[in-house]
Length: 101
Image (cartoon, rainbow, N blue to C red):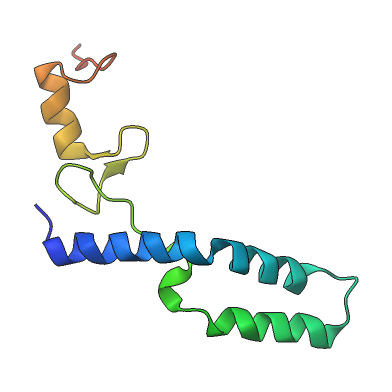
């Protein structure tokens, strides 16, 4: 089980990303628009830099929904490799079978 503080920190980041997503998209569109002059684009980039760091989507970690483990996650299931194996062996994940040859 991951530290609860790490899981909570990641949840706060998700909330900030959701809150600032429209503003970030608007500023990014202005900054990448080549038809505008350089000063407007520079101002947009500076405003993007003023946004909180944790509002950037790249700072959000994919974590296991059950344990909070940050490494070895399968996006399709939202689980870490360890929990995926345990639940798969118990037959709790539909369509997942343990391979053997």
